[in-house]
Length: 84
Image (cartoon, rainbow, N blue to C red; front, side):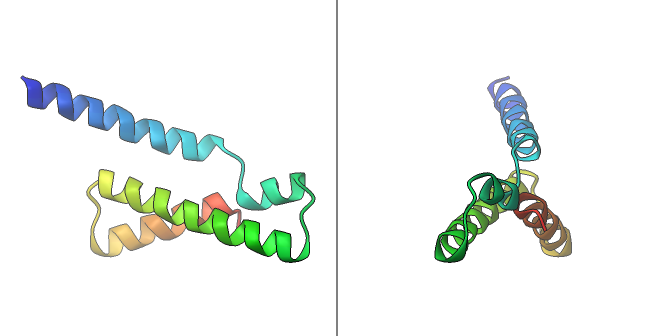
C-alpha cells in the first residue's frame, strides 16, 4: 500500500515539474525582459542553459527514459527551455 502511495506521489511530482517547465518563460525571453547584453547576456544564458539541462536530466530520469529516447527528450526539453 505504501509503495502505491509513494508511486502516485512521485508521478504527481514529476508531472508538476513538467508543467512548471512548460509555464516558465524561456531563457531568451528572460534575457530580453532584463535587457541584457554583452558579457551579462552570455553569463545569464550559460547559467540558464546549465539549469535547464539539470532540470531536463532530472525529468528524463523521473520518466525512466534511456538511450535515444532520453537523448531526444533532453535535447527538446533544453531547446524549449532556452528558447531556441
